[in-house]
Amino acid sequence: QVQLVESGGGSVQAGGSLRLSCAVSGTSVSTTCVGWFRQRPGKGREGIAAFDSDGTITYARSVQGRFTITKDHAENTLYLQMNNLKPEDTAMYYCALGDTTLTMVVAGIVAYPDQKFPAAWSWGQGTQVTVTS
Image (cartoon, rainbow, N blue to C red; front, side):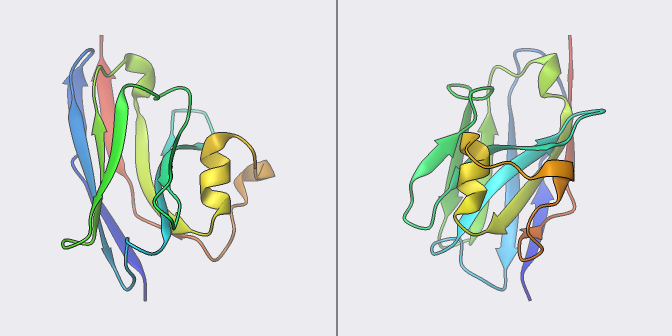
């Protein structure tokens, strides 16, 4: 059974940094598509960064140059380093594990109307990030 557990959220002032972690069990981060999504208040869940199964990284334009996704194979953990945070980054952040369409969602190529993501994808419980001005 795949489980994803996020940590590292919190409250930070604009311009600050946070690093989110996602501990993965039941599968390997080395061989699957994994990524980060966020849901801002009143908005749908959006993909912001992802690894494809071959290691290719994709970022959404809104975080390109500020956020960095990495993974530790030994710890089987996914990370999201967030720098130069802005108030509009305030959201619940989720890690997700799925197929290659996960990276296509992050790239803006694929969208799921009404937030009906594939049932086969796995999600963590989320971690809240609040950025104050």
